[in-house]
Length: 83
Image (cartoon, rainbow, N blue to C red):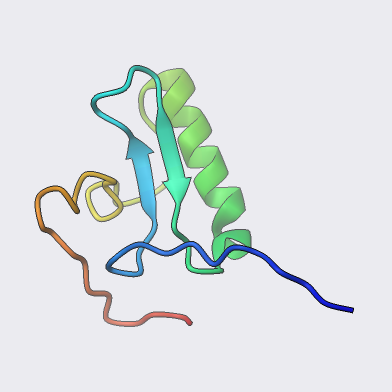
């Protein structure tokens, strides 16, 4: 028996979460480096609230996970990282 799947990651190994600026009504929550299942509940709630209400009460640092940080050359370095 074998298993195969994607191991999606970003250049700085931190997820990209938020609205895509140049495409109307497009949001992303990707690049969790294999840890998306652990974060799915909170991130799913945060993204749903962001889409429906324009903001989220989930305590998430939106700037840290900004999907456009790579265009600006802003790679994040976490003090602690799993994986």
